[in-house]
Length: 65
Length: 165
Image (cartoon, rainbow over all chains, first blue to last red):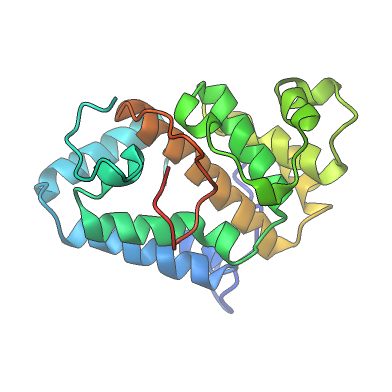
């Protein structure tokens, strides 16, 4: 896996990161944001369980971000 | 048959299971359908990549879905499992498929060269759209497999206006 960004930032003055690269597709980013924010802010699962699962998934997929 | 309860028998099983959380299901539908609904990429490229990711996962529910608007011939669909050895695919399709088939289990092996080849055919917004689409195909297969969703008859490509198959 490269450590060089493969797509540039769409936000002036910001380095490439998840949000600034996704901003190349503003509608896609907005719909992802709506889904992800709802997942985290509402629902029947305790926040702690979501966070434990998120961190474990990141380790399994070896995602340093 | 999924091990989760689902509401309406007339609703495709995947949509019905996600419908246990209707707000999340509707937001997921809208996000998942964006590459198709907003014409972010050629439908043929989306369809080939979707089927290739489903093939790598051996996901029958995803493989049962067809997008007639993609214009994929049965011959090309059949050639997909061995696309590297086939002359049926365009340079863009080949560049997209090279990344698509690594997405499920070999994501760390997707190389700068793979992306350099893709960027010869797609601009940056389209490159982001394809990458998100591939991640969604991967996630869609995982969801269907883990929830044990049965293949739906006459399943069609995603649209925010239709149930998910």
